[in-house]
Image (cartoon, rainbow, N blue to C red; front, side, top):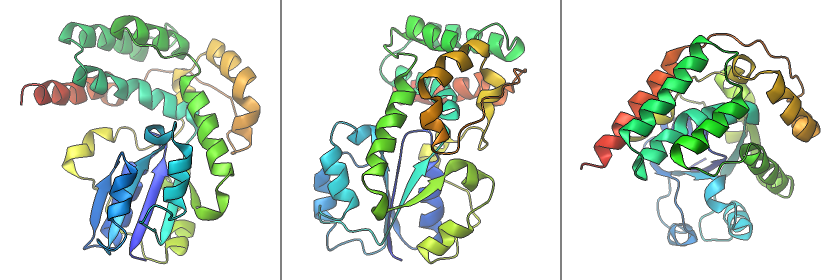
Length: 273
């Protein structure tokens, strides 16, 4: 196996999985999130050892192009393709913590970040004070964003539908299995021994946060479960995400407020260089 494609929604482990595959077939080239089909057209006969990571959201409005890339119709043909899936409840939490990075890149102020960090710290210390729905509302208010409560789940539904139309073209990898070390099926599918290294390029190291699953159980409150279970419970159950038990508790600032401060500091630096 010399050419691999890794595709998934944001915050589903695509970076670390692509990096592990890359390390496993080194020396090889790793391409992170190309945005146009021309990239693949130019790779038809070059870069014999290559791993490409794609984010579904970048192609969400271009399903036919993404499908063509997946099926090798755009010049680049992967030997193996891995499609990532992660519990969207965890994905939503991760996206809320990562979102300020892009907000700063797009011009958010230090005062806005400080206000968001104060709310996250309050949630960390007083888990019952804010629901996740409240966090979404506050993120929108502080950054003048337009996220709906359903945005991440609706993207998950679109991604799941796209996967359903292309199941013969990839190996489905659950993020929860990967972080738990259950990678034997992945290794067998790829036909390689997977590297034990979990290092990623320093330029994208900020994307790593908990490297765990189930954080939503500590963050969500009853109103969150009531809202999202009614709307998406049956769809999530199709992928094995059928348990809605929660236990709100204080959370580690290292994966919340401190993480936000670290990644936004990087974003602020990028605006001055």
